[in-house]
Image 1 (tube, rainbow, N blue to C red):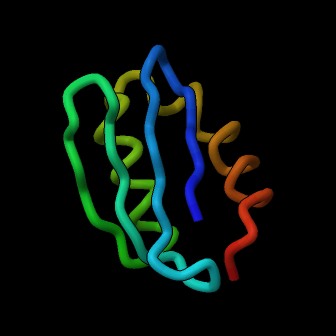
Image 2 (image 1 turned 135 degrees about the horizontal axis):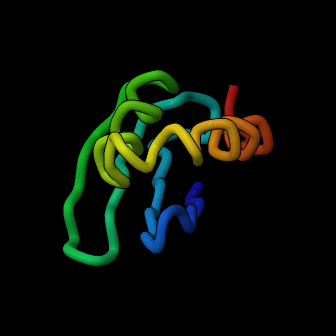
Image 3 (image 1 turned 45 degrees about the vertical axis):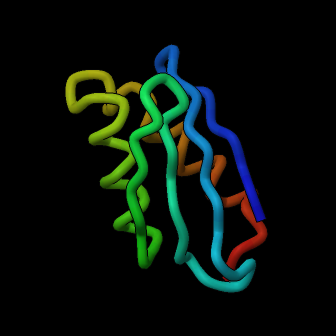
Length: 73
């Protein structure tokens, strides 16, 4: 399962290993940076790092709302 997030002028691709777990990879399109996550909190922290700590607070609530739409248990 794959999702794309458009945050702070960045495109992030989230690829889940299994559609029933919060495990997978995240890619930043601009430079190809890739990171792995093993749970939802980890994914949230990776997104914070990829978009920047200063910008993250204004997008956090929006991202968490999007997470609720993901069909992942």
